[in-house]
Length: 247
Length: 232
Image (cartoon, rainbow over all chains, first blue to last red; front, side, top):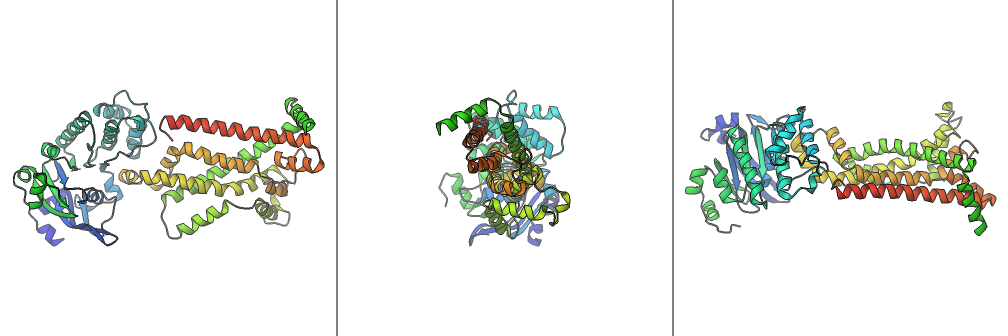
């Protein structure tokens, strides 16, 4: 923890935003995350990049508190991520997990859990993600892109301060991907901290303010996006950006 | 056999009051038992579906084993408890429909708990991360699973009702098969067959089968509709 707090700006970031300190996780003798330490800026979009199996999605789950790390600390605004703290966060999974209910009932569920009673909010959210007029449709009969947009609407229903997204546009049509990216831009402007796992280098260039780059459960570099795409600190990242296949 | 079937058909169509009294009592007892067993069994099933604790495996083994409870043993246990010298004898429930409801409830609660646990646990595997992300309480998870699993759980309730309405061993012990008081379809069929009165036994059998078909058809149709709407 001392090393972590010695990092430049770490103390400020640690107090204001999301900080990971010495996160390690292994399963069946295999190290999946290895001593990951970083302090993310309190605002903006952090892209988590790396090849398949790098541990990006796992890191996101640990950061959100869905999986407990074997070692290390996850701090959000200076405190450990408790059930209560998680209510100020939201996550959109790569494969949207929608309830077996109508479109509007899915959003209503999130609002109800958050204790929000504001009937017009649901319609505003659905309108925002381009699902206006689809309220009564069964959520699971929507297309993949629509399902992901609904999952995003549901995540935004609680006005999270920290939003995690695990490859939200993977295999989506360009229209749905565009809608999601536009909303992420808006959320960033509104001050929501966003942590986005993506494989998509052009998308990371469009969205990211800073980038975490992982391979094989190791954090290779954490840079602001402009310098990462220009001159990455890690040779692995440079090879990844050049289109090489990394193990 | 042909004559017996003909007479059975006449009994059903003529609205024989004795016959319909037995049918209605059977339905009342089994529906109430199913309702109570659903309340208890679904609560247990959903709690087990979202809970991890030491000894959970042993609890599941016990509940699964209880699905095969012998009705006569249940009848005997309820009888011993409700008989005048038993701990609950002061209630005066032996040989009443209430005693039969208690026996059937004990018989089918493990069925509903075990089957619902399996369905809800499968559903929870899908939802668990999202629920954790929402910061949903355990009670909240149970409620959400029960609601989203409602169409699949209809089949569970049907299995419980089927077991209850077709059961004879327990209800004959605690109900006594008393005419106009505790005589239900299964006990009446057993009695009339032993007396050689095949038309009444066959008529009751036909009605029992019809009820099973209608209830199954209804549940199947509800589930098909739900599946088409991706709600099941």
